[in-house]
Length: 135
Image (cartoon, rainbow, N blue to C red; front, side, top):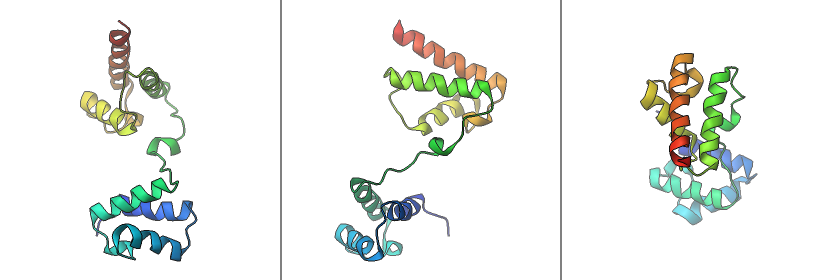
């Protein structure tokens, strides 16, 4: 059976919020009417996760756990992306949006895996975005 990332986040949230079993089951029951996460469907799991976020859970992005790249050209990609986000040019702050951009340009799934020539293409495209916006 494939792992459900939403269910995994629910259990991470339970641990990080330090909910005892009784409190956790009370949240599940209040939100979904069910007392076990294994009985929840996809939409119900999302509702529970939204409630846990309301209670203070802050999921960590995949990039926040990752140490800085050892490749200077990959750090440049992330640096330019950060500048575009701060300037309001890149509107989607989700790291997945950068991965999608890199995938569309190079066919590579993650900026960390870029070769120098691929990263150069991405860097130049990000620079052009910045130039166009600053006009």
